[in-house]
Length: 254
Image (cartoon, rainbow, N blue to C red; front, side):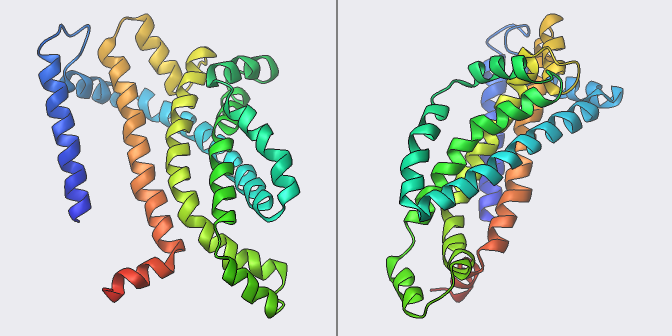
């Protein structure tokens, strides 16, 4: 509860600062929070908000899920197999160095601009983050546990499920939060650059064409709210559920 109140306090101070800055500039430059809230209400009444959110959320989660599945599996295997790690590390570093804008341009040549291109761009942009976290988490496993498992001749499957995966979560979840934030940014940018006819990027593009600055801020605010909701209502509860030893430590008071 303390963390919740502090988070709400931080959001409240941010809104107050935003309002103070908006008072110093004309509405077409920095719209006040109430004007942005009015745009959100208008979009919700027209039905455009929920349709766009559903479409962009589906694309974001699809690309993010692909990145987590491929990046997590590759990072885990690379941590277990040194030769595979040596082969994949420079490839992943090279992919990470490619700007998302360049990925979007390539994706527009290869895939459908309204469907596959955003998903592909998100997956490629987020995958290196997940891979690096999975790799470091696997390599950081306590060697004494591995040696003890070897003494008792534990099967490889047991090593993965009972030793590597639980330890991997402490490294993976911060990467999931960072990757999810990047996924939303890339999704919006991909839809905007692709000239998508649907999704939040399309709404942002329409607001830009109509010089509706409050509408542009409204779509950006929706992305921020969705990211906060997914982080606090999905990822963090999932982390607590999948890390039972942390709950036991917290409950033990020691």
